[in-house]
Amino acid sequence: MKRLSLVLVWVWLMGVSRVMGHETAVTTISAAQLANAISQAAAGDTIEVTGGVYEGSLVIDKPLTLIGHEWPVIDGGGEGTVVKITAPNTTMQDFIIRDSGHSLDEENSGLAVEADYVTIVGNRFEDTLFGIYLRAADNGIIRNNFISSKRLDMPRRGDGIRVWSSNDVLIEDNQVFQARDVVLWYSARLTVRRNDVQGGRYGLHFMYCDDAHIEQNRLLHNSVGAFLMYSRRLNMEHNTVAYNRGPSGYGIGMKDLDDAIVRENLFLDNRIGAYLDGSPREVDSIGRFEGNVFAYNDIGVEMLPAVRHNQFVQNSFVENEEQMHIAGGGLPGDNSWMVNYWSDYAGFDANGDGQGDIAYKSERLFENLMQREPNLRLFLYSPATNAIDFAARAFPLVKPQPKLVDERPLISPLIPTQAPVLPVGNNRQWFWLAAILLSVVLVWLGLSQQLRQHYTFPQKI
Figure (cartoon, rainbow, N blue to C red):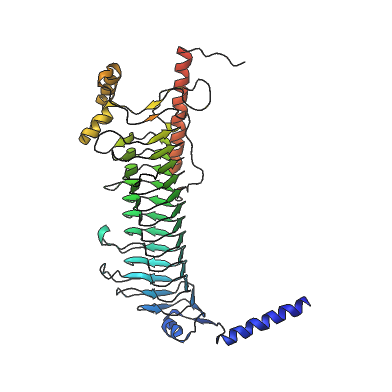
């Protein structure tokens, strides 16, 4: 009886397929036959392409699945956009797409998508101005592609990935090298995860993108790791953002963001770990930084004086040249600093609860002078800095107002475990993490010895 039911269902499905007028077909060709195969295919067909080279531009104007074997090549010959997809429910997988045109005005691309529900998987984009460009293309998937731009000066390159006015797009497991930016503008509910973006200008550039999730990406050796602007409810979690040292050099830059959450990221060896300008923007909004590591940056966190309503909780600030900086000087805004770790904390933990018994105050006189006169940073490692700070401690009249106060600082750092490691062959991240732990151990041993020499604590019963 069960077998009869299955047969009846199969017969019904076949009847529906015939009524709809088409039974899907699979065609196997070489790359040189692509245009002819597409013109003869019916909507929903699969075209398998085995090796070869197709020369010239290609338009896919009906829903098809194109699957490459042995890396078939579509070569644009240096003219215009190489592949354009204008039909929804199309998949393109395992091709080499190369040699687009050079026109930024025309936005010459390796692959331009102008339809919904398009899947781009496992392709290689070589010598393309823009790599993948989605325009008004909702519910797209961009997965496991390798993208590199043309060998041009940075401003003349196109974006490795550009998503424009396209909602609910998933971008994951891609590698983008030596492109200009990864741009995500005017789009809602984007997910960007496990991507490597290196050697560009903006690793990620969000603008007017609400409800986005940025997870487990590596943003390395760019001018700026991620710049997030004019958006609401962006979540950035478990990313590794390192060695971003261009003219701006932000690990993350935030402008006019509301209700953003930045959690358990590694910000390592950037010029500035996090830069805040007008974030949050609305009076009833907040920004939350929780469980991040800011280590070995020139400046851990920099913000404009008017920035307020940010919460910094359980972050670890380790050996930044300046832990926190107020850009342009002035008094800090109303932000809260709660239970963070500070590598320059000189307090103690007598009761062993993991939190310092006296507050951490960022009130170095030399840092205050640098805010007024940035050129003084040239003397950061000179003996003059210690002399100035010693004088401020000896003569409280010249001590500056604290830039921040953390009433219960952590004694040991918290290291995120889900942020991705650095690429194979680059052990600098392990070096930084080892250095963080070693510095904590040395500081703790020094403090313990001083405490034993000067204090006698009651024994626990």
